[in-house]
Length: 421
Ligand SMILES: *Cc1c(COP(=O)(O)O)cnc(C)c1O
Image (cartoon, rainbow, N blue to C red; front, side, top):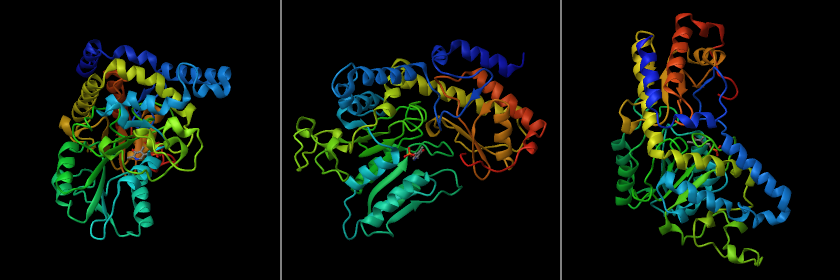
């Protein structure tokens, strides 16, 4: 047997999370490595969605307060259950809206510009939606020129020193990713937060690519706010309700986007025209929560609680270590560039590889059952997920990649991206 296969089998045998694989719907001969874009469906997520539909069936309007999962408190309850994943107090985390909406809500609430301090610091590698949201806040406040982006020297990574050097007296707020969505680099959140606070700057992180893949200590690091989606590593389903965290020291600020679900629950149904803001994170809700888009989280979060985020992180690093090691060995001399940092502390839950035929390679891999994703102009992201991928999956995926390269299978596909890539 090939030494990498032997090694993979050994690692699988010792894997303490391997029993979770059978809880997910994963096809035969499919090597799903796209859990950082859309996590797979689990049986428990499916069941909890059915359960909530049963509540509707049997309770009608009373489902808001009756049954085991009263809808009226579901946003807060799921928030409490995500608090452990981000390292925050249960009254500081909420499930609500989408990531982009939550950027608007948190940034608009915490951004307090003055004549001289009004800039927002982001980075040139961030996801477009984050940038659109920040720019629109600045436009609405009459500071259209206020967006400053940390440059990346190489187009893939950011340097902590460069970020810190850009924190001057004109910056009011910072929003950066925890893990960069393309290169998979983890930023030094604690160090960045400390430096920002020395300059009295509010600092927040977008955890879309780290939630469910690595642990966070937002409260200990004193981070002001964070937002994240729940359909990537958390496997909450397409468009599942997003999460947010705001440090309790900011809960006395009036929220920007006010709505009746941000009202104090005790007085919400008094139907007064004067907003009585909820005292805790509940204040960040706007309208009626999207119950069916939250329901799968009730089930899948059980899996995360049982598995433990530290164990997930350690297996995830094992999987990406194995993949990097194997690519460097088996595919040495194939012009494949591994962009993702090798040091554990700087590596998130996926790896990014570069090749001039990347779009064709991605399509050829998909035709052979390996599911990564393509990022223009010449990159493929591969995310082996700790809860449902094995080391043998990684072995098979790399061997299929080798076949694609050896037989130039990518030439049979257009070297262009599809509408959703
Ligand atoms: C996935 C992702 C989003 C998506 O935002 P939605 O509002 O859920 O569409 C935003 N920002 C980053 C960094 C992401 O990775």
